[in-house]
Length: 128
Image 1 (tube, rainbow, N blue to C red):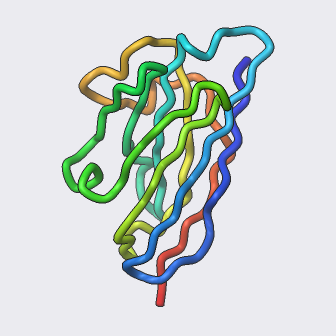
Image 2: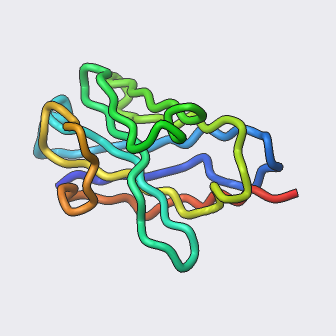
């Protein structure tokens, strides 16, 4: 089993920034062999992929619009993945989740069904 705990959500004004954290832990596996992705789900909408990163720091972004404002990074020593979100917009309001799956590369597409372990989510609200 892999446990994931997100943190860093909150309320921010449009144009502001937040950094989300995803702390991973396991007593069974070597996390170097897991990729970790970020997803979000806005009220009434499907969960959408944002980005993915492997232990080597190679990352994939689901869309150019995400890549322009969000940056994913990983600290293997701390078993933590970060999502730096800048220039936030009201439409970024959602619950943000991290997820993990056993793989060494993220691949070209980030698909929800490929991920086996999920955190509980952290809420981000962008509002003036």
